[in-house]
Image 1 (cartoon, rainbow, N blue to C red):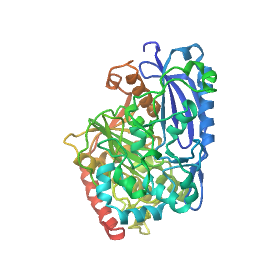
Image 2 (image 1 turned 135 degrees about the vertical axis):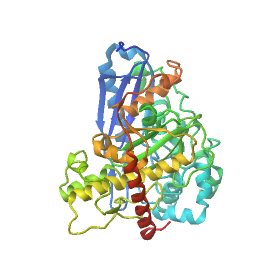
Image 3 (image 1 turned 180 degrees about the vertical axis):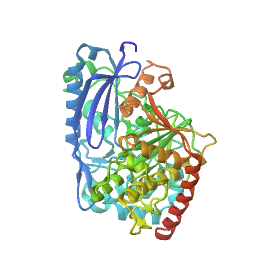
Image 4 (image 1 turned 135 degrees about the horizontal axis):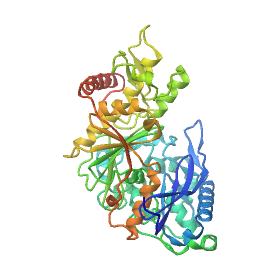
Length: 490
């Protein structure tokens, strides 16, 4: 392995459980000794609230930068860019002075459920989906804005800006801000073809255009930190800071899914499948389309089910972990069970937010292992349906790269997913894929590399589908879909 060399990229990854800062070299390799992490805590409430104190997030970010620069020592002088990614579809209202009028409201906040329902009744959701790549659901800004207007009219009257976390960071550090097309696209208000704010939605919501930020490409930097940050971080005062991008886009790039030839499958607490495309002409039903940057779209679907389903079963039935060999001893779909794994409602592909989990087919002979195996299979079936819709939008047959701790820790689940989808799945070998993706974009933006494909990601083992098991699972998917239609509709 060659020695590390600059220019270096300082990455800041702001997630829902922690904020982290890392330093990457010119080859997009992390310097293990230069790492900082601060916990972050989302506040939730019985009314569906899911929010953050914005000041706590900003303070955590600043402490991470302090620590990373201290550890970097003389290497701090070779930092060529700062790249930020954040959890997405976050929302905050600001007053005329740029001060928060609301907490930072996250995608998980469901206090706007009634507002999303009313919007679907008022507007043509299919047309909105085609224009913005997003549905009229609780995760997105249209329903969030309608909720704020309805429940806090005094706050709405005082609002002079609607912003993302990335914009709030730039306002604090530079005194001015923009929003990347990546971060903006996750809000559901951006026209995915023009990369400008959707005039029809703004009109329907009564939102003046001046409340929304300037949309820029992910490669458009800001330079010149404002006081007191200029003296606090002199090494960063005059380097390019790129606008924050969505963590999902960064994870795709960092794991090696940089074009339409490779599809990402991520399973942590929840799940997602995504593929980078240059163009998405017509939106497939049930999927979303966000942006990586001005040149690339991100087509995919997300599930509310993932490792959380098996975690619930472990708590309830004392099952072994999903990687336990005992689960492999249960033959594919031999248990007679059909599960709808919607313990937290459904997102892609059916978007039945009020759906609930169901297990059918149990007998006196059913064992906890049967239920565990059936649960892993049931979640894999949902990914297979998303993959089917994604492949229908492309002539290519992509390979699949898997990431996320819940999936990578389980050989059994990896094989089940490969068999259900019917394509080989390769484990990602990148432990810091999200931060690496942000670093890759920055390295291209500053001209340190010509193309991120020149720095391929590390990979692990490949799980090939078994044709006989794939056929078994196709029948099981149809059985699951029949139960879905019976209980949920569609």
